[in-house]
Image (tube, rainbow, N blue to C red):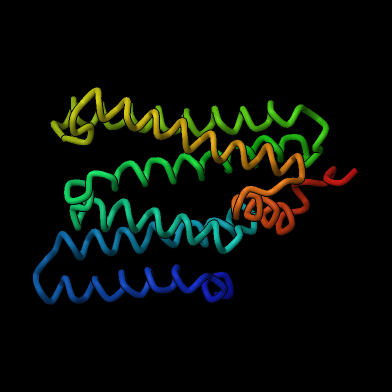
Length: 213
């Protein structure tokens, strides 16, 4: 499949590592590791497979970010116990995901205006992207709370401190993603984030028919 071949070296490296971990885990009788590696590999292919289903064309850097996040969260975070071994692991993942959801929220709002930069103030479109990302973070914290209460899990770790810390990091990450959207509308740059937005718009121009009018 062309979409799979066209991905970045990092994406292919993670896929290869997970594919190798599955038979190694089975040979060693580490069933949990094998299952987690298989589940992570399957989930990491979702963005590529969803492109055809949804009729969108994702930038390879965006796909790479999703694959890295999935690998870091499930395989490294849960199975390799990075969450407990490195106190900052959860913070980085929460912040990174919030940036991504901020970008996604902005793009969603921008498509509703068909790419019209002047349909609404730039700050308003960016703010909606921020709200979208924070909402995702809040729903996730509710999920963690529910899992702890119903099934006796320990997803919240230190309870209120963990929840509030995650929400604060989510707000910071969402602000960065939303600000990138704001600068994109103002035709300015913010590292590679505005570049990802520009690449998505170019690849999916049919959703942004009013862009440039």
